[in-house]
Length: 308
Picture 1 (cartoon, rainbow, N blue to C red):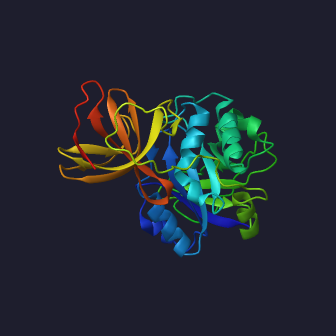
Picture 2 (spheres, rainbow, N blue to C red):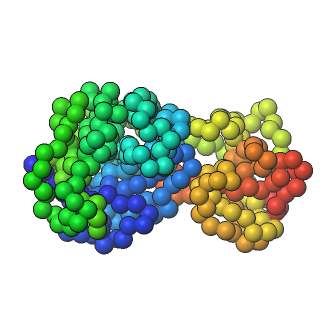
Picture 3 (cartoon, rainbow, N blue to C red):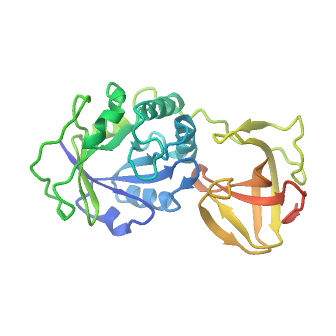
């Protein structure tokens, strides 16, 4: 048996997901430790509504692999067990390209958190970089006959499995859309997504702890250190901005912007962190995702709004 699939990211048209040839859809969820695909939930829900098999992938940024695995799982925790998980190992924007142990550490952490082994997507010429994952993970190889092969017909070509026992999936076009063939039936796909013993991600859930304006940490406040090494303190409240502020996918000035929110915007938050010159608030969003906004200058203590 074989299944035809597509993979999509934030810039992909919904028409790709709706293509009647595609039996499965694999969606970019995260990249590094600061980017979350803003269309991930929509794309996942659309594919699910069409009865497609589902998958989610993390694009390696090359930072700390355990931190990236935690960021990935934290952002898709509600989807674990419903779709296959994938590490996208490519050279572009990957500072650890060539590191033969990075993928091993990433998949180990994903497995520790979920008891699921992710597949690894990689170009054929770089399979050697992920060879030490061969005993546990499936292989999804990218190899094209040409960039103009805009067809669902699989080209007649040899595809190496390297150290892996076999090729689980072959991505064979990358022009008008990314098409792949997976050598799985529906039951095998589901088993990769939700093997026996799969568990809910072992990531601590927020506990409400109402307190007024976030200021200096109180010793009694429940707290944790995130994947970037920043300490967060649980606190439930409401912040109302008094100027234009960036709402971001991460609590850094370099994180991707969700929106520029105007003065008077109401942000309900469940945690705060004081680092890198600001006090950041964490805003719960849909499906276990979060937005982050700077609410105060940590050096002068000047607030960029009021708190309720």
